[in-house]
Length: 85
Image (cartoon, rainbow, N blue to C red):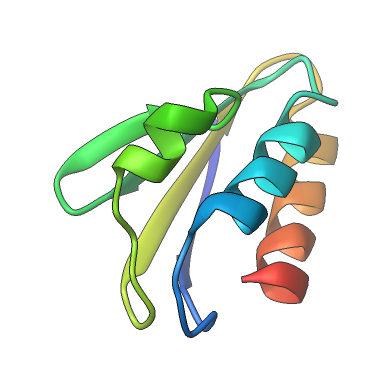
C-alpha cells in the first residue's frame, strides 16, 4: 500500500467536474484507490461517494493505493491532485 496526503487548493473543493475527472482517472488503474476526508472514506471510482465526502478548499485528503499497479497508480493520482485540485 502507498499513501499520500494532499491539501485541496481548488476554491470550490472536490465538486462535480473535478470529481468526474478524478473518477475517470482512477478507473484507468487496477489498484483500489481510497480517498479519506472528514472522517469518511470513498472508493475513487465511485462518483457519488467521492462527492459525498464534501471536501472543501483547504481540507486534507488522504489517498491510499493498493494493488497490482499501485506504484503507477500512486504516481498518477499524486500528479492528478497536484495538477487539478
